[in-house]
Length: 240
Image (cartoon, rainbow, N blue to C red; front, side, top):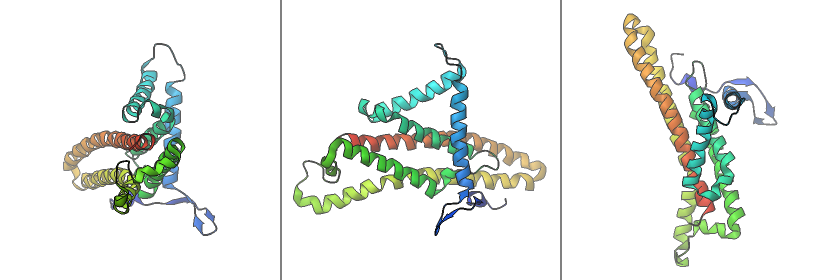
């Protein structure tokens, strides 16, 4: 692939149509499934022999569990711990999707607005449901905080609604932009390796360094995505 943008093309593997709606199984869908299977397999493998004194593999999973647990408690509070499975799933799914995309011939589904956008909308709807369940009709105070004069409602309510609806957009764009730019850089620099012959060792070393950096960025972006999800969940649970 000489074109650095070709790696982001959606390719149909199994065409499926329901009426006029195209729900085909694509390379993006395939790597989402692979991410889930890889995550499940890793956890199952590491925890197959659980002991009171954990071995290295068990410690890895327990450390990951504790990391997300502390993240949720710090940003949402004790009340948010009941939603740990949802937040933990988001973190692992995004992290595995980011890292899998760095393998040769892999597809990075977290570089697409549709995939990440749907995940962000699901997170937003989850927060809305939690907020309504906890505050009932009082959840509407999200758009008109207490203490604001009702005369300012025509100004404050639209601003708060725009701010609320921009949450999935901010989650999506930050992750997609970082994944896309990083992979484009890798592809462009890798294109010089073969063309320069013996001198290709220089861009090869540089590309290797970028891959290490991209692994860090992949995990960092999963962390940031999870932190923001926790913050938005905290807004839904607690008062304005």
